Image (tube, rainbow, N blue to C red; front, side, top):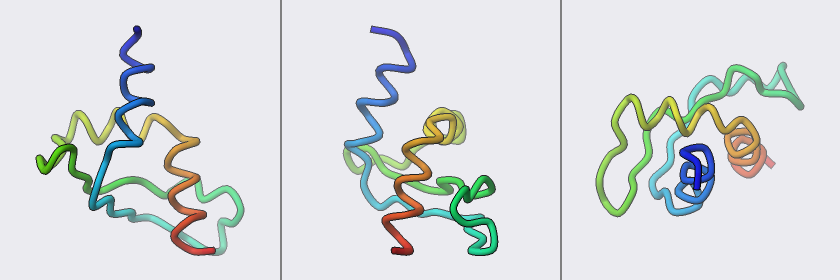
Amino acid sequence: MTNETNIKILVHQLNNVELEGINLKDAPDFVDAFVSYAELKGRPLTDEELDEVNACGDYVHALVEESIY
């Protein structure tokens, strides 16, 4: 399993996810949105882990749409 695959699996296990950079004028793309905080099994993600999560653009986009629609 690749690291990318691991991240895609783990993003579905994240809790307390906080988003920033949501600009409604940028709909429907929301390219500036990003995960600023999240927890995995009660542990806050490191900056490096957040970078990996944010690299999963489809996941971030889905979170944005879920949060505003």
